[in-house]
Image: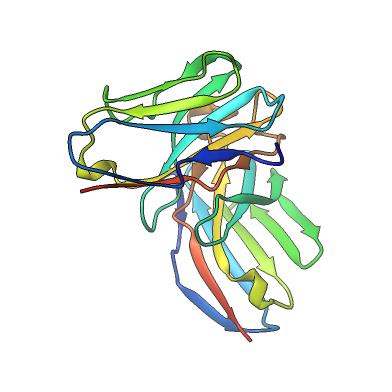
Length: 116
Length: 113
């Protein structure tokens, strides 16, 4: 595809519901990242995949958050038993190589999650 | 103290003005710095990245790193209404990483026609 695609664009959930957010990275990109952006803040790192391997999940706020990338392309971020504090924009990004020091990171437009 | 600090603004300037956006960072070991631009309801897009100290220029944009004061800046010359966006500084070096970006809060810039 032309860029990183995320769906849904907007998601409203009742507190306690489970949600699944999808990311389609740019074809052939090895690295995939999830970031969380609260209102008025910069994005905060959640997790990192290199192909299908989840190499870093240190940013996931709790065990209610789970991410997977089973075939090394599409990724899903799942949030169980959503809480109001989970309300944020969830951004997915991909890059061709394995680092970001000299690689361009391409972001999707994000999924805006609102938990009522 | 956050590892990357950025004044959130907002900043409002007339068209044609020179804009200066700034961040400070806490760890002198940081080497790479990036500036991202984020339009409303879009993801961030990379504007420029710099390594170590000095200036880097790309068209109307200049990125500057001063390692002695741990200060990074983005200058925009001849600012245009299309430059209105949130500007985020970032480093991938936090925690010894070479992939995990740490962002500032972002500065919201409005360029008025």
